[in-house]
Structure formats: structure tokens, C-alpha cells
Image (cartoon, rainbow, N blue to C red):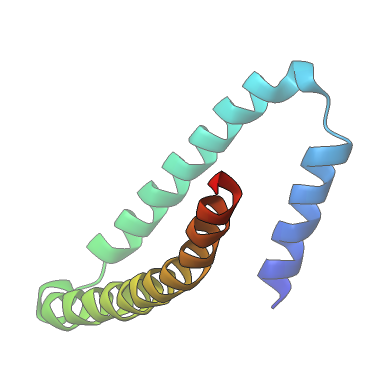
Length: 97
């Protein structure tokens, strides 16, 4: 929850207080931080002695963490689009008549 609050505060500060002229510098800083994070994660995984034994279970868990939210999002968007765009299309047809 704390991470979500910090991210929301960052979005608000970036939108309302951050000067436009520093946007490019901020983008470069974000890329450097992301690369550092990926490197640190890779380093910690590589230093684990049981990494290759855990790799299959980590891969399976990661796949499920991808598949379940993506599938649910896809289904939700499908039904919401079907519901709201159908009513929108009917409104346009009545406007044309």
C-alpha cells in the first residue's frame, strides 16, 4: 500500500509541480534507475546457489501471474466494450435517422 501511495504522490508532483524543461533529464534518470534495478535483480538472482533448481517454479509462477490478470482483463474489456460501444452505436444510428 505504501508503494502505491508513493507512486500516486509522484504522479501528482510530476503533473503539477515538475517543470517542463526538466522532462528530458527526468526521462534519462528514470532509464538509469530502471537499468540499475534490473542489474541488481539479476545480480541477486545470479548469486543464489539454487537458482537453476528454482527456475522452473519461478517461471511457472511468473507465467500464472501474467496469464490470470491478463485473461481477466481481456474478458472484462471485451464485455465492457460490447456493452458500452453497442449503446454508442445505437445512439449514432438514431442520430442519422
